[in-house]
Image (cartoon, rainbow, N blue to C red; front, side, top):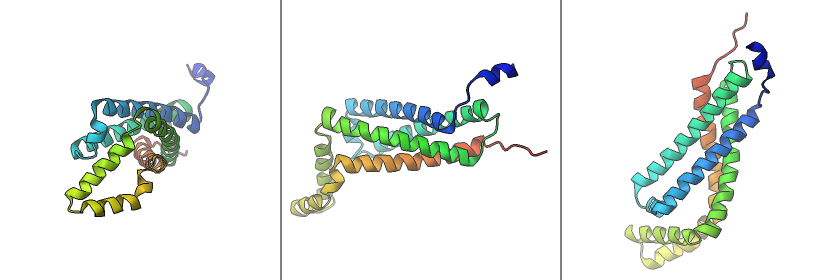
Length: 185
């Protein structure tokens, strides 16, 4: 049996991270499409329960696939040992790759599928400002000052940064859970 294990090619941490990132991105796109089709994407801007459901789903997906990738790396590539640092590295790299792919998806999605999404987000934000007591003129001025924040490029940057952050956190937790040090004799 040991001879068969030695014949299987070992994968690097970056290969495991890439696989996890592709799966995370695919699952995230699927969640995104379900929310879009059901109308929950815009509803999540005003309904905290739906917003939290979306966040929990995406973080849960991210953690699960980073944990699976790290466990596979530990058991199949590293002889049963893995450090917390390797978990952080795998999670961060998977988060970066997934973030870049998700940002590209978001750009394509808002420019070719949901072309009115940014306008809907602006509209909901404007309504929320007026509900909080701002006059229509004050809300319009604030919207003009914040126009950069309603740009797909800004959203793409936020997607990458948040994906790296959550990848790092998920990798840290997975590393702590799966950590197994080599014993020195």
